[in-house]
Length: 487
Image 1 (cartoon, rainbow, N blue to C red):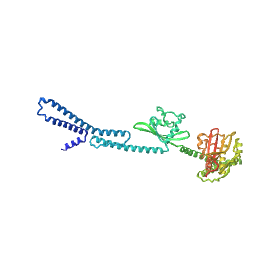
Image 2 (cartoon, rainbow, N blue to C red):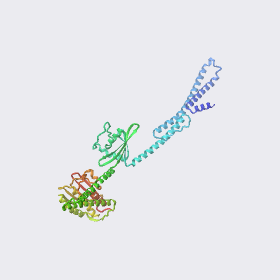
Image 3 (cartoon, rainbow, N blue to C red):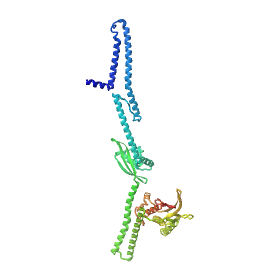
Image 4 (cartoon, rainbow, N blue to C red):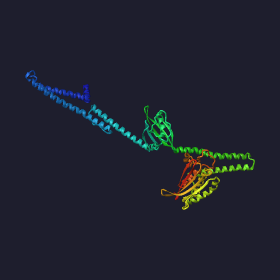
């Protein structure tokens, strides 16, 4: 009995079972109809005169059976086709991106099971797509907020993903194609879609399939590039590059090394001379009074040099700490320029350097809020620096004029010389402490702090200073000072 119940449930919950039961029912109905219609003619079955009626009876019975079969066939087809059409329409909706589509089929056969499986699949797809969109938006927000540039390339070198910073970098580096000198890697394509500063690194990553880190110098900037391959199995399908501007870090590291080298040089040299000459005096190596006086003079000069170095260093330390006292008042900058001109006039004649002043005579160069002593120190440092680097037969010019910037009055000062100039790679660092463009460190009498002091003095006056220099042609320092001053 249990076997028959199990078989009945199996047939009822199966499309094949339903189809078989329907066909069996249809055959039984047809046989029943035939039997009902033919039963009354059993007695006259062998009557030859009724053969026509029997044929007609068979035709009528066949037509009725055909109609019944057709009716049941359409009924069964509709019962099977309707859920299949629902599944087809639902699949079309899912293929168009509507993952919330569900089918409502309550049967317990294979089609009902298929509908339940389809609904579970679309539900999981909906959750998965929602999670992927969430992660995509999260990743997009992270990329947009990153200060570093992120660029993803495909295997052909074409950009497939980048953040705003990376897009700006690509636009800026796209013009370097002709000006960039670089040897291609052997047996590797050139990848024209990759910017030139990244091309060689990209070639190595695509060839070796390893993460690489490198510093790239582009004009006056330094960029740290970390590039990793994108792999699917053993196939490299592209690379992702994370690029950071490390110009400031590179500059600070360079300044640190130069600072140690300069300070050690500036202190070691006078200390060595002081030690050597004082030992000569203690050992009575010098016999004549003239030689003794000469050694004492050298010791005195080097001690003054050490004193200037220490004072300059203390001054700039106080300025950077904000502890310097400023005596702001109304001053005549023209008078300060003339006083500095007179101070250096004799020294310039001795060096056979022409010293010129270009200042307006019709309108006074008045600053409402300025420290006269500090500005004189600024001009003195700049003039001393210009005279030490200007050869005989050349000239130095101090120029001053009124200037309006964004509707506010300023006085512009220019100190121009025709000296040896400053190499372009040293220009960004000349206002740093102890920095000297003279790599041989010739003893020109400077401490390496003069321009750093000048920069801090101008900053305390809320002004600006700029330098333009061409090697073997000359250097121009431009100072912009506000007339009204600023609180």
